[in-house]
Amino acid sequence: MVEKRKLEESPAKPKVDPNAKLANKYLREKSSIPIKEIQDKKLKGKLRKTEKKAKEAAYKAAQAELLLTQDAGYLEQEGMERTWKFSQKELKNAVDVNTSRKMFDLKLPEFGPYALNYTRNGKYMIIGGRKGHVATFDWQEGKLGCELHLGETVKDVAWLQNETLFAVAQKKYTYIYDQSGMELHVLKDHIEANKLDFLPYHYLLVSVGNAGYLKYQDVSTGTLVAEHRTKLGKCDVLAQNPYNAVMHLGHSNGTVTLWSPSMSSPLVKILCHKGPVQALAIDNSGKYMATAGLDGQLKLWDIRTYKELNAYFTTSPASSLKFSAKGLLAVGSGPRLTIWKDSYKMKQTEPYMTHLFPGSSIQDLEFCPYEDILGCGHASGSGEPNFDTFEANPYQTVKQRQESEVHSLLDKIQPEMITLDPTFLGKVDRAPAEANHPGETFVPRKRARGKSSSQRRYLRKQGNVVDQKRIDLKEKLEKQKKEREIERKKQKGEYTEPKRTALDRFN
Image (cartoon, rainbow, N blue to C red):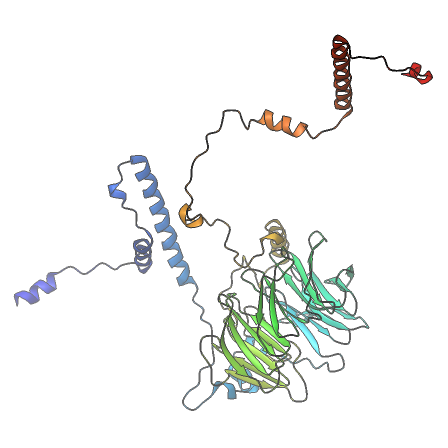
């Protein structure tokens, strides 16, 4: 009875805020400064303020995690069911009304096959038919933006910084149009381009074509930033790494090369297939790459180590590959579309979803950002449910679009910053000097005072300047030198007067 009474009288434990618990755990792991042992009061105060700010930041980060309540949805099977057996018709009947409205089919066989592209916020779509038909529209609302019949071959289309401008790779040149369909620019440097891509943080339009040249065009200034000769012939496989903006090219000899505008040779060259590379895709994290070749193989690569992870055989050579925001891989091979889940984590025995386009061939695939939509004439896929409105806002107004365009121009990154490791800025080499220069000891050099003063640097620079005053001074010194030489010879009696001529009176 006594123990029971003690238990009843014991006070209840106070509730612990889970955010504060996470913050304290973060600080215990990250902070290793024994502040109590520091004698300097000023330093101790600074460290305490830093610790307080770190605690507040960790607390707010834990709060932000609670705000992202949306989870990515996937198909779940029960019992003997298989996800790849679900048809699009069954999915349309099972999902909500808003999602079912986003599933549509455009039948335009007389102008195909089509290339397509979405804006960064996923609201607008552009399609380009091989026979010259180009159209832009708000696909969610079903509103047509503009429609063009160019009357010549269209190889690829790409949006630029937003829905107001788009580029079209036509038969010979690449053209830029505005949202009303008016032709603004003709990029005559981009001749016979087969593939286009746009780097949003650098404002660079990238193209590669039949001539085998990779070209970077700055659309904010209109200048051609770089033009690299790949020396590997015609190329029509192009993809950008969203992590470091390095461009990946697939070539006919089975290799994949990595390029940046500041280097005239490839950063990395990987032999991926025994035949020509047909398609290429890189996931959003920039760590994994998928390649498909004419040898009928689909391979997954780890870009950090350049090693092959998994390999699959396709019924026919894949013509298009695309990664979704959540890591699903869409593969288009002939009339068959297959979607693979966790393809780079482990070897999969069966696809996640399949769909068949009877009597047609898949030309291009594109996942719509922030939506469970895969653009290929039909719909499926997996989008990121928690989007950042500062990055790309699907619900932005005209005013917000103008403001975001101005801010993105002010924050534009220079092409020279495109490297394999984009985090090199701010890094400090913490290795000791002995590791960088083995066998060498540092001996400080004693310098005289004023040796490198600004006046001396100015005088050294002036030594390379040639002006009339300097020439006159040089002639005067030469004349004085000759007079001294004559005076010296006269004193020794060795001087003889030179013979004078009729022309000497003009001197």
